[in-house]
Image (cartoon, rainbow, N blue to C red; front, side, top):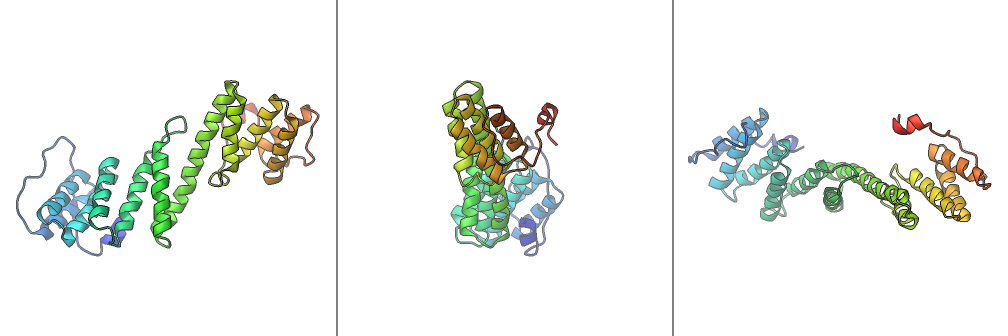
Length: 271
């Protein structure tokens, strides 16, 4: 996106290298030469070399139009080099120096994307997911109608699915540990939180509520959640499971499942 919007403004270059090589020696030279050399290195995917030249632009010509462009290029190069914290720092610098600039949306977007790229599996802390969600929502709220906002909305759905998955993982942990009330709270969060209601985890959350309520002898609650599951997801294997479970308890739901129960092998190897 950055290259599409900025490539037309100036011709550019690229550089490469590794973190252990010495920094670019200071030498006063025309700003166009520094910038274009950096862009040439960028095009050749020599990210660290490109960063060196863009930093020189910023150092030798601070607060200039060239410096503004050079910071944006640093964000992109750091991101491509998987140096996410450096990219975020460069984005923060741009936002601080040029808060009202039209390119500020790119800086905000890239901050969010850098956190989004670092989201780990649901078994780990979801701090990056929360940071990404905050940043993506900021872009959607403040830059509506831009391509960045459109992409941010897609990523928000993905982050919500991740966070809902985390709630499910904790709920299953509590359920296995014979802590049914704690498990219920986690499953209900997935079902009732508007941000999670469009995620892929809702059918299982409803089934788990049926399962836990049956284990507690609360068959009316189990039946009510099964009815919600059957009404909204009649073809889901989770409803087939809930239907079978309640049938064994003498509380067969009125609506028969449209789908079938998954085999144990399908649960281990989905798809």
